[in-house]
Amino acid sequence: MALSLTPRQQALSAIAACEAKGDQVALTACLNEGFDNGLTVSEAKEALSQLYAYTGFPRSLNALGTLQAVLSDREAKGLESDPGREADPLPAGYNALKQGTEIQTRLSGQPFNYSFAPQTDYYLKAHLFGDIFARNNLSHADREIVTVSAIACLPGCEPQLRAHVAGALNMGVKESELRSIPSVLEAAVGMEAAERLRKALASVFGESHQAVQTVDFSVWPKGEPNTAYAQYFVGNSYLAPLSGGIVNVTFEPACRNNWHIHHRQVQVLVCVAGRGWYQEWGKPAVELRPGIIIEIPEGVKHWHGAAKDSWFQHLTYHKDVREGASNEWLESVSDDDYDKL
Image 1 (cartoon, rainbow, N blue to C red):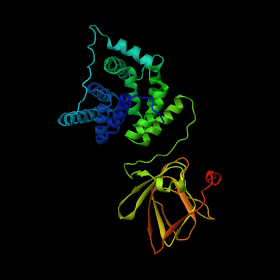
Image 2: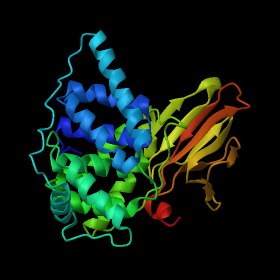
Image 3: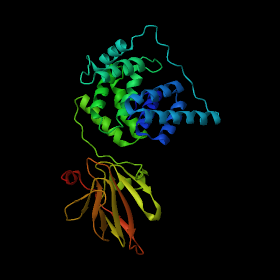
Image 4: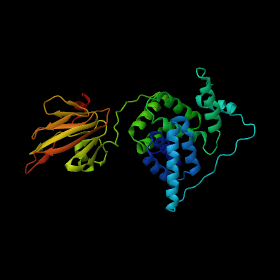
């Protein structure tokens, strides 16, 4: 998918996501990539400072500390980091409550008054939208890209995420730019946040959405595309060799291997993430979930793969391997048969 976000906007999105996840290692990489692609120090500092209002001071301060360390490291290595410009001073007599109310009304598309908690209403209007959004070293559209990217990483905040997706459009973020953010999140922090945002986008734009169960590649690595055996798979799979002859196999949703037979060896599957299927010829399919172990006898025709609405990972290894062991690849599992599961 071609991204509509500029490299600078992608950097803002990525560092916001890393801040929200509290992943300082990923944040370090995203900051360096951002500075190499036009992000300024002022913009990075502003984005990470703004996020205290959405993710809390602890995450914001940790991220700012990481930013300091990155800048020190880049200076020591002779790498340039554009300082950028600071925000202009606010004019004399600036009324934060008045200006913030106008900005919040624009974002919400209508006047918003949180009468249940008047003090929180004041904080939102006067401080968040009055003081913070008034700083012009980030545009209002930039700030909403940052906000949407961060909230997408926070489980349980889906109502706020949907509100900010809609509000981002009112603040000048293009629809194509919003639709590009999930791809940035997937690369920066993983599929869970990307899937959460895709669901919010579908809700705001009145589209149907097929929920997909994701897996965390920081637990079991995704590995590299399984190009050597791609001809024996429907969909995309990935291989991550581990120690002791064990391989972690990752299947994207609806991916499965062809019917096949292991000769003169026994295959063992240890399911570790997501949901999938295993089927032996002439028998009903068996649902696979983490913790299930399948021992496949030699000479048995079978297939295994992901459910249509879930990524899936299993570890695999062979035992009782005898001389002349081999795999016999057969026909693919038809869409008609698979879709009945």
